[in-house]
Amino acid sequence: MSLKESVEHLKKNWRVIRGVPFLSCLAVVALGIFFLIDWHYRGVLDAKEATIRTVAEERDKANRDNEKLSKQIEALRIYRGQDALPLKRKALILLQQIRAFIKDWKDTDEGDVRYGNIQNYLKRFGLRVTIIRDDLDQNGQQSDAFDKVMYHFSFDSYKDIQVIASEMERLANKLPD
Image 1 (cartoon, rainbow, N blue to C red):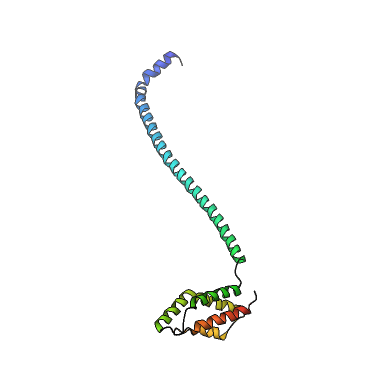
Image 2 (cartoon, rainbow, N blue to C red):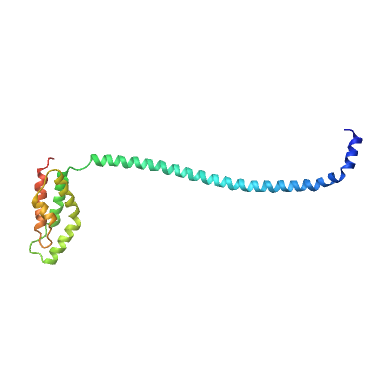
């Protein structure tokens, strides 16, 4: 295009060319607003991504810790299983504890004292004696006297506790070491 043609073109389209600075400014402002919005949301997205990354890292660490603890628990179960006391030994230890607990009891104790002693015995040994009785029974060691005392326990004399101790000892001694 020659200079003459360019000048003619400018004369014809002067109004359009005169409006260009306004449109240019408008485009620059719109572009600036777009970049500000984009910058803001990129910051928000970066913060969200950082939070997600942190949560994922914490989750992975918790999963690793959980696996480690599960392995430790399993190792303890195996260890405890290998270390379980034989039934005879458990029964004799319980018997020894019961005898030490009742050594100062006298058949001449008053009713309230006797009742309190029996209540304390039941709190401390009741469940364990029941478990040992069941274990002895499962291992072929049963006694009608032991069962009778366990299922028809009397709270007015020490006799039932003495029968429990003697029957537990008799049955435990029948077991192999």
